[in-house]
Image 1 (cartoon, one colour):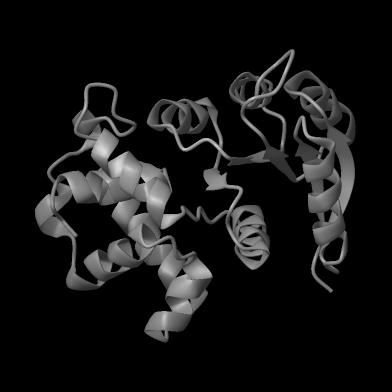
Image 2 (tube, rainbow, N blue to C red; image 1 turned 120 degrees about the horizontal axis):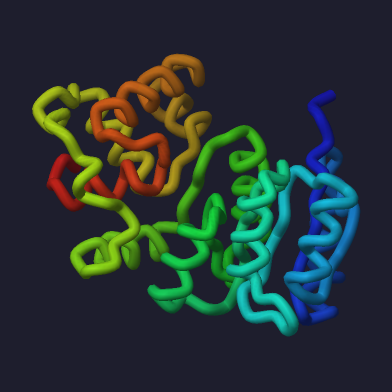
Length: 219
């Protein structure tokens, strides 16, 4: 049996906390080990319980989700943060990802997509909702873009057709496992290809790689 993913839920709405806990606890490979009503409580739980994943709301009292995420990253706690919120504001998306969130989800997504994202994030994959990815691409043309164009080197001509294909699928929000299934390749092969893409684009971040590829019209 695969390792159980230990999860903390941080949301100021009790109904949301309880609803998410009910959904996640039905999964054999997931366990909600704590809930928090604000970012301060979430940070304390991360220090004490060392969860694998935190589902983090943005707008919360005392300490908001962005600050809590930033402090989790600064303290090098093992938790991977997935933002789950109703707010799709460009500024908040960028701030959350810069703070260290692995991905940013809107609360209206289907439960199966949330479960898939939790599993992918736990594996080390980054899955971005298409609508959030589109906002980040639009944002990339502004002054405070998430991806720094100075990180983009001369690797543009070096990307193979296969690497561009994989980048396109990454931009659609597919995980390495999903890409492997779609292309009839092993997951290990896809991971190696993704590593090569990162090297050529001068980044080690999935979201930045997609943004750089889009900005430079590689896909």
